[in-house]
Image (tube, rainbow over all chains, first blue to last red; front, side):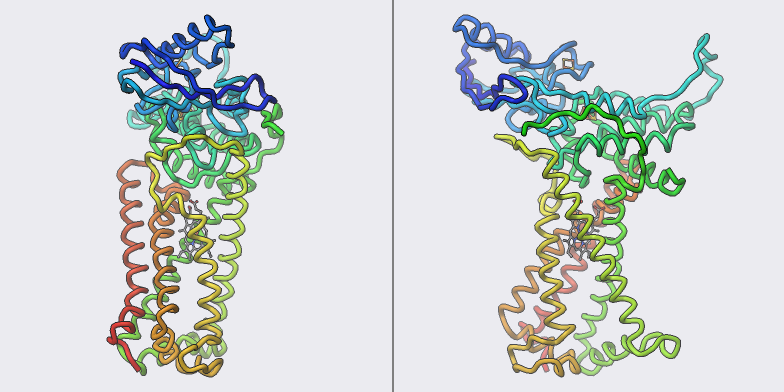
Length: 247
Length: 240
Ligand code: HEM
Ligand code: SF4
Ligand code: FES
């Protein structure tokens, strides 16, 4: 396949960026999207141009490091991570626009790499449970109802990639927040800190400069882990309860 | 200035000072508007029972609650309540809209919306349209200051039925009204389900689907119900 790539290039956080256009030949349908970019970078090295910087780590859809806005969609046209997106989703002769996640809370570091440490600070502010150290407790000493455990497991699949923020017209991280709040709030171990947690995490979310949610639903459609919109309802419910409890 | 990540953690988090608290203000005030628009629509539809019934209804509204409440007491309590809700709704909307704008100052070159409804993406413009309409509507009917048909002002309010028929006999006043109803339909289509979600009552896929259905229902019933009266005047079903 032969492709035209329009890629956001930006030397560093404070430099002006611009879209550069590249022609890339010899792309196989079996390549992953990131392998296609690797191929481009090999080509750029031969011409002496700086390779395109992008994030990746596991390349098997479980770490959440890869990002990329591909033709206006976070992680591209399929419901998966960019590393698990394959070139068979594109056709010969396609033009593909590749941009970094855009949010003031995710500043561009270089080219397509953004700083997602805002998510780390949101987790730091409350995305944990406190447990005594020592030997592991007996597994069945704290029973968890099956439906709640199931829901917690389903939303615990959030890999913190930030696609929800990238896709949201308000730049809100509510789906990420909702996934964490639901994951910990559904389990017995999450109860003692439940309402303090939602208050702190939402406060940190707002402090980081993410926008408020307007229930538009672009986030859930972009999420590679198919986290559903009902976690945002759960988030809202927990925050409302926290208000009445005086947090 | 290019965006930079804040390195700090919030020291004193308060649930009441969050974006979600602002959303709750929008949701509660929005639901109040929905309740009001339903009752108001019921009153409007009395126009189909003729001049006397319609004017009687308007008069009874002023006597409602007497003698415990003074004349027009109920009306004024409603007006003050609605005004407080309106100020809260619009203030929260403006704060949240500005936040959203600041959250992404560098726009995408290409952005596709794949899941969101047109109504959800036009809440802010539609809301602004409704605000302008509400002001116009109050000048037109409540203050009774605009009656291009007869040129009468003020006193025309004593006969609300005639004012209504006079108003909708003017084509451009009917169009303003119908455009506003279209904006209202859009606002309610998204606003209804959005407020239920904001209040945290859509924790399952099925309850979400039901909330969205409620949005369709209210949009069609309310905007449609209000549009019936001007359309009936236009077609001569309602006349003086
Ligand atoms: C006065 C002019 C108005 C303005 C400027 C306005 C603006 C807005 C905005 C910007 C939103 C937030 C949209 C979002 O979160 O996606 C909203 C939500 C809403 N509005 Fe309005 N609106 C107005 C009047 C009304 C009226 C007349 C009604 C009902 C009859 C109404 C009902 C609602 C509801 C139910 C919501 C949903 C709240 C939520 O998302 O939780 N609004 N409005
Ligand atoms: S909710 Fe989905 S899109 Fe958002 S960070 Fe988690 S995995 Fe990524
Ligand atoms: S690189 Fe780990 S999820 Fe894509």
